[in-house]
Length: 204
Image (cartoon, rainbow, N blue to C red; front, side):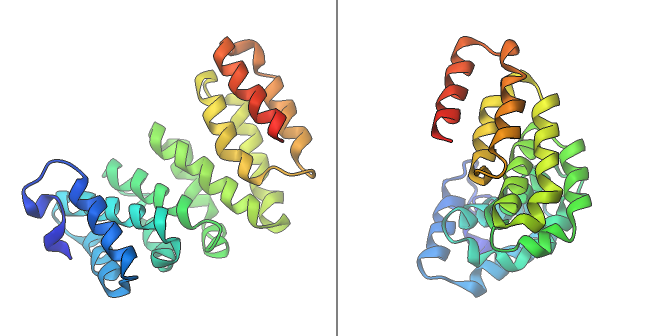
């Protein structure tokens, strides 16, 4: 499967990687996914970058196929390769609902990556936290306050998108503090951002 990566085909676009992910999902090829996951250990940065792309694209379609690599993705969060870091957080966001215990057990590492990561890493960490909260009260008690604190301090322009990412875990039991946190920041938002939030709140 490695030979089908974009870098191995002499391509600078992501189309081959997306097509490979679709191929792996179409045949539920666990061995092929394992080969791609092993590629994360390569000394060739281009191979590593293409492999993480394939893996999270697989995660979008068939999370179960990459669910066994939760620890590998968390290990990668400490990498100096930013592409690998945010790609791994993206993969974790895909599998958070199905590997909640494994991810929760290493929550400090994920929070550290969230606190020190790039914009894309932060975006996807919000989805990881929301995915955990959605699973049940055990995780919601610990992780939901992280989301609320994020809403209080994040950049105003990030609020609508991040609130939408969080919405998957919002229910009757935690709706009030969520909406309260959003309304506390309304004065910082543009009219279009306020409209976007109003639609979200109405759905809740």
